[in-house]
Each structure stands twice: as C-alpha cells, then as structure tokens.
Length: 327
Image (cartoon, rainbow, N blue to C red):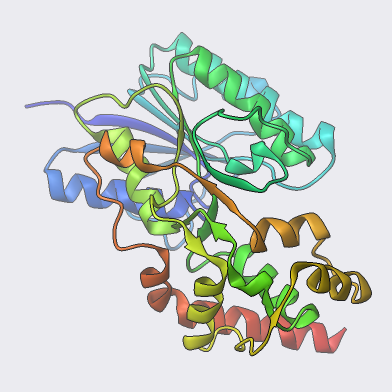
C-alpha cells in the first residue's frame, strides 16, 4: 500500500487557495490516492468551509522561527500566499523574505516539488500582445508586483514551478469585476471600441491547474509559465457578457481611447489610469504551453464560467453599492 502524498499549502483560505484546497480533496477521491494536506496560515483553526482531513498549522511568513519544520516530511509545497497591499517593506517581508524562508525550509526537508503562484502584473505597463515568458523584461510598478517578482527567485533557484496568471475571475473576485464596475460608472461607454485583448482565467480552472501540477505522477516543468486560458478575450466581449448576466449595465456607445481617458480624469475614483489601461487595453500573454504539457485541459474559457459566478458577483456588487450609499 503506497503512502499518502504529503502536501503543504499556503494561502488555503484565499481566493485561489481555497479552491486548491478543495481541488486536492477532489483529486484524492477521484484518483484513489490518499493525500495528507497541511495548510499553513495565521490560525490553527480550520474554516467552516474547509474539507475534512486537513491539518492546520499556524505560521507567520514574516517570522522565520514559525516556519521551522513547516515543510517537514512533505513531498510537495504549494505556495499561494502573498501580500498584495501595503508599502514596499510590508510586501517584501511576506513576498520576498517569507517566500525565501519557506523555500529554504522545503529544500532543507528534501521537498522535490514546489508550485508557486506569481502574477503577470510583474511585466508592468502594456500594451502587451501575446508575449512569451520574459520576452520583454519585467517592469513592475507597484510594491506588490515588484516584491512578487523578487519572490520568484528563490523558487526558481530551488527548481520550482512559477505560474504567472493574468486577470483571475470567479466567485470571490474582489478586484477585477469590481474594478470594471467602478470604471464603467466613471466612463460609461465601450472603451476604445472594446478592442483590448486580455489574458483571463477562471479561478476554478487555475486551481485545477495548480492541483494537477502538484499531484500528477510526472513532475511539472520547472521555470516560469503563463497560466491564463490560452484564448485571450476582448474587453468588449467581457463587458458584454457581464451585462448579459446582469452583473454590469450595458455600454451603448463607443468612445475613442483619449475621450475615455479624459472622462476618467474628470471623474475621481479609486482606480488609477494605469489600472484602467490594464483592464481596457491589450494585456495578453502566450499561455498555451502549460496546458499542453500538463494533463489538465484548460476548459471552455472564462466567459463561459461567468454564468456560475454571476449570483455571487451580483450580490457582492449590490452590497458594495449599499455600503457606498451609507458612507
């Protein structure tokens, strides 16, 4: 009788990590192979939604002492935790020093498979049109993306696999569609005719990919891989699908890009001009390779998956509107 595959997972309560946690449980049921999953986080208490049989171990990525033996006895490390807000030092403490310390522990304990989640935001301002991994030099502009790029280095040095997804959609997305909602209020039109091509991936498809890379009999190819759906989507098609699902209102007019920027500048809000460009103009990355080399089909695409996420998005955006009106 084979022993369980022992997996250490960080970020298990997050947007992507919670899906991976359930994906690991599903993989064990479908394959018949037992998995022993140790979730590392700030609390030792399992959330109510967590699948049974997971060991929860309290750690703090900014406290190296708490990481000692965190990877002891493991076969696989899936590192999904990151800090995406705060200043340079706060982000570096988690995304660089914390990642390096965790990877050191994994190497010390002989973990021979590491899967790490980064982001295509490390490339910085676009437009980007179908670029391969590092076809252009990364040029991150925020503390989060700069430190996430730096955090890739210890993973790569250990022979790990780094994933750079583009925009991640699905229930629990508190950035992409909420940002589109704000921007559409400020600039009520099809932005530059909706022509901008975007690399998108549904959160459950990304989680399936991560789970497969972690558990497949054959080890994943080390190095950096783009991890969006292989077919990019136009901003116009994305906005039209969100309107068809009654998540966002429809846009009835086409405005040229300069007119869009002028209106954005005249209407203050949280989303910056750079973030507007990220969501409206070409930002897509050649993402076929990882799906071709991994026994995990990419699925029908993020627009098709939006139907399942629509009730969550509608409820979340309605709550935000109520909270905004109350302020």
